[in-house]
Image 1 (cartoon, helix red, strand yellow):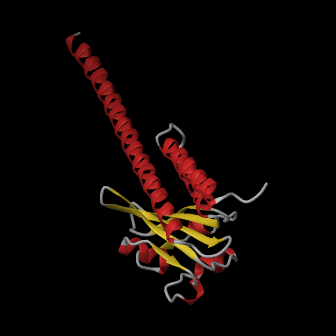
Image 2 (cartoon, helix red, strand yellow):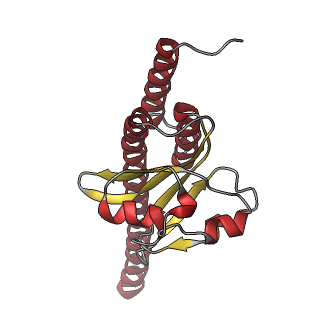
Image 3 (cartoon, helix red, strand yellow):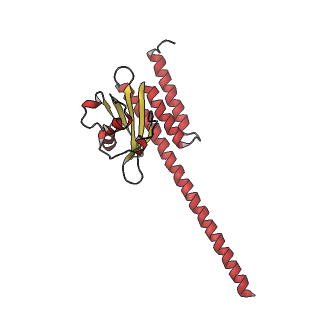
Length: 206
């Protein structure tokens, strides 16, 4: 199969974004939605790997929610302080960046490469935010051919917007489930209390 023309590639990228938009509003497991979205990031901009870093609810640090290529799970145990590394800097500044020579950037967080044995040459990093709330960052690593372009940045930013919505949907779902469980527990305790009160009343009237 020959190489795609520029028009064909643009059409394929649009189709990918539309499919992801539909996926975000689907009933699939939110964790699977996020993984599909990160996988789509590599296809959209023709990169080798991508990772999704999300802000912890407690602790205020970034963790690797999805890290393509990390088969050992080592990155999932790593935490990054906002402002640390290129990803942490993008999270804190809320400004997307293209870094063509990661090794020459003094902000580079080399511990991730040391842990996985993978060499990051260049990267594209975009912040995730929804309704003004900082949620995390999407980092896309090592362009397969050539350099990351402003067009890649536009596509990644559009993708990041969809991932942010998916994250907010997951949090909303978690809150709904928590509220349901609390209501169920309250109803169960109330039922026990009423049963006990009824038994006591019957005993007292005898």
